[in-house]
Length: 401
Image (tube, helix red, strand yellow):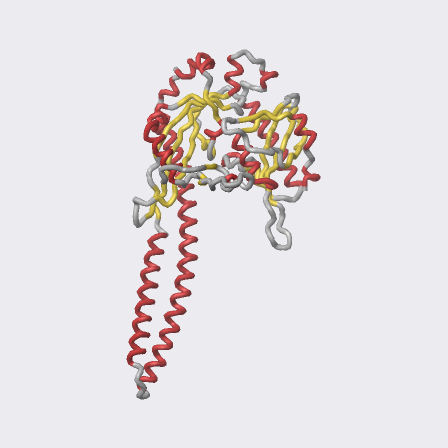
């Protein structure tokens, strides 16, 4: 790390400023940059204990009234030959509600949460004093991670490592064995020349030495690669936690009518709307002849993966569909920071599907491609989109091909 940087930036296009003559090149800051790592280490050194103290955060996209506790869990997969080296490290998130239901909270749910305003703190004093929060929730979170998230992470790393090592091992074996065979053949011919009375002793010794060196290299490299195949799973550790208050609960306690705020105390009713919306999208995709998978429980950033049939024997691009079910009469749709980032990163693969539910009937789905045009501001956790404008831009699934 340098003692001084003339310029730093966080985006590639600002490394070199073509519109400013004489402007020095900037250092691109990223998670692996020494300056970023140093700042991160200092912040953690000074404030790591605050993660354990916890925080009270608000989920602006949750219109329910059930608070949850979210835990941050650190899990590492270590090198088998050298446990001090980390092969993979993953932050995992687990949520627990008052009923003790434990779920995977997704990849980065904290990005969609915002601090609770000080003026709203009196509204949730009863939640803070609830007996269920005082239970040993860390143990439950670790148990869930140990039985679901940790094995998944370990199997993923082990599978990837084994495939990589096997591929490298095959390439090394093929190359070195080919060289060894070449020099072995050369050695046999030189022995014949020596038997015929030619003076090839020096050359013969060099060839023999080359064969021995190649054989030793092959054995050493194979031993090294076989050792790399072995990885071990470390014990997961809880780094911190937070009490997550749904926006719907705050609206309820502030006296906002449900029909105006969109919140609902009936979790079953909300789940029913979401289920109907997801089913409508999956049926529409199957009607197009696509293979459909519901991935909403995996918290991967979208709800439905739809895979079109291969064309000329080649797989086509899959469709990642984020489903938004809304009761008919609502005027907005809430999207989180993560959903916006997923949509921007996946570009044409991402589809926002809107389904309007009215009792046992529904309208849609209506598909909106490229619903987001820019990244949210750094302090933005969620935004509300006008439902009417989205529907004006939407198309029915058949027309979206």
